[in-house]
Image (tube, rainbow over all chains, first blue to last red; front, side, top):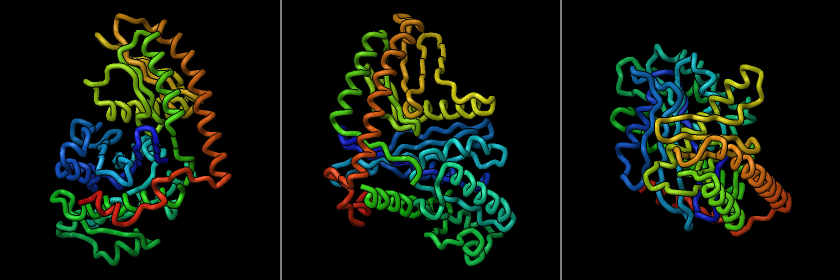
Length: 195
Length: 164
């Protein structure tokens, strides 16, 4: 649900990073924060536990520039990935305009990826969204680790709709902006369809 | 897409702004602001220079969302008012018409009673205003009206430029 303000000439859109625990959602936001000019970003807010696990959400407002005289702002959120934070995840998906699913490429995390993806589908459906109709991209993160699943297999299991996907190493920034750009583009094109 | 996007034009924005200014004055508040339930700041009144309003908006919405989640677990529809008391500043958060969140920050120059009273009055006016905005948006959608849309002309190049 975007917020279009003709008075201040601003468009606000919400993008949520979803995925299993420890897949690198927060790391994505941290990298984006690090690499964006100070005038383009707000504070990175992290509601995390002492051990730096996301408790409620991370939040990063980004103002990348103008389109046709309108300032375009993206509000990036992450959800807490751990299974028992299900109730919080639901809340954060409210009013979402686009979703990035961050998958952990390690073979031993494949089951966690599948579980999280199913959880995403259920939570979206509860709010009347269908994943096929939402601006959506998948990121296969941690490609630098030794025990990663082949991309072909990951696509077969996690990307049955054949959406845009990206290989990433979020700690060094590989694939991070490519993923964001893909979903941001889809969100703006969706606005174009509606207005 | 579920729900409708919130579209606000100059005219409505001014009315909302006036209402917030009035509340700011009458409640003797430091800052008053209005946030979309999704965490986007709509308007504010008062001295916001030293406040990170974007973050505050997002956290307030998170707060309301979490409280709403607790309410539903208890079989309540919603807790419509939240109040946090600090050493110097206090914050009064209320949900208006299930859609927007009104936040009032005040100190010892005002009181909870006064804030509650004034917020109630403002809520009524704002509820009406937002009903009008929603029905206007629906009407325009039905009529297929696209008033000077900035998006119709968006090109791939425009979007690519954002990421330079």
